[in-house]
Length: 167
Image 1: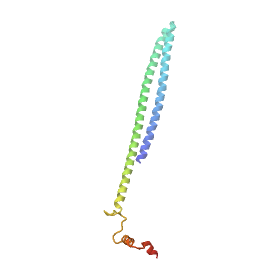
Image 2 (image 1 turned 30 degrees about the vertical axis):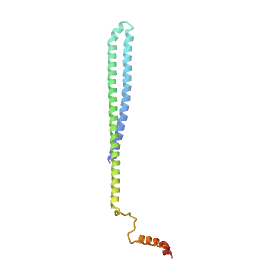
Image 3 (image 1 turned 60 degrees about the vertical axis):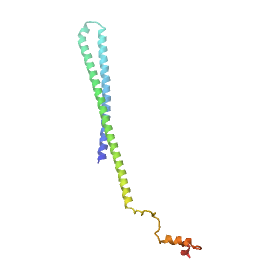
Image 4 (image 1 turned 45 degrees about the vertical axis):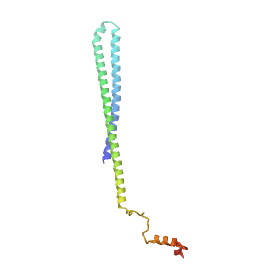
């Protein structure tokens, strides 16, 4: 359940980054458009000023207002672009934070799995029979078949045990 919620959160953060990128592109386009409008208003004002006449005096207040409005729009668009850039940075930071959280949880799960495996191995080692000290687990107790084989092989003319049983 926790992993599903984290995966959902990661997808949400990814979608927010994509939306922030789209908003940034739209803000950049709006800023470019506003800059073009401001340049056009300034060029129109300069063009009208180069042609003296009675219409210029009537047009001048309107031309100045258009240039001021275009400059204000360009400044506003520049601010919107800065805000969109900051929003994209915040969205990317949130996406990275979710990624770090997922990596941390995955590492914690790996450590827990290693600890569980170590506990299982320790438990299996504790439950298995322990050899007594000083002897190997394959040693035959005194007086057992191992002693008879040694005694038979040390006598001159002795026949090995395997040969006795088949005869």
